[in-house]
Length: 506
Image (cartoon, rainbow, N blue to C red; front, side):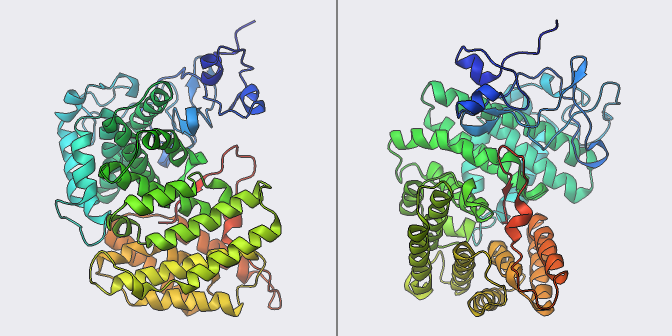
């Protein structure tokens, strides 16, 4: 009888018998462990799952097996989950004459691409993609700073990427995806970007596993956090969905070591990345509190150690960041049975009261521009809306308190012109208002603002528009006397998934 294949990585590390269940080992599941997945038995040919190759099956030896979920220790993917696929045996390779080829030998399989950083850095395409990341992508990642040399995405990531191969691949993958879409180069967008992304994920998996065995150096810790953020930016620019919620979760193993080493303001680079990931953790928890990974201790540390760049990247004031983070964590605790209904409701009422009493006039902002106050106001009422829905998911959208929040968000965002860089920070508030707005002119305004943001940033996150359309279509199908709430979160659920996908509405 032929063997069923090798044991999963977790069982192999623990030297125990594995039942070789797919996509996850049942023995790991029964013990509450994360199944590490199975060794790859195929060669990546660098064909993306988007476009005409979408859905192509993966050749594994003499049989086709689909790896829908393969994660390393602490929830990090060891391969590509739900984002890439490879060509079947016999498919033609890409033409080596295309400008977007990774090297002159562009039909070379991914597994044979060099991991020597000096070799990759001298490739003509590498320089082109690094320049695109530097000149085009970086200025849109942080408001006000823009093309300044102090831009942290330029100052922190680029020097580190020239020394750490995994981060270099993450930068090249994001840049190839973005540039390929802009210039209409399908091979660069669909194949080259995916190849680099795969290499970045493999490098990241190795670093995460290494962190379980030994202490990472400061530079290695920062590299892990930076790769994770770039992979999430790649997800946002492609689909707005991060498959199986693995990337943010993978940062926790590094965070534990950061705390053990005594993380403080001196580690500016690490604090910057950790702060951004902590906010992304909250954003994904908007769709379901069970997705939350970071604890309130992490958020407290971030709020204390971060500087104004936190607001410039994420828009949300740190005080509101702490309030909504605590409320979502209480929601998760209630879902797990750790908090009674009465305790849960009391915690939500307190959070709502804190938000209402928070005065945007009584704090300092990154600059003297009054628009920062409008951004703060928009995030404040977006978080109030989320808490109102946690308190009562069935509350009708026409409820006066809900509609008052919608109006506050629309009025605040209306103050920001389309040519102002800070407009890119209000996607989440606009989405939250859109999910509960009822009038056609309000919906038209929200869609128009989202289009303005897309044109300015040149990043297209399709999730806000797609979810809003589903909510509005469902409301339109209701009878006139039906006040039943249509929650946008119902459209982010995927029954049967071991890990839910992350919806990154940014």
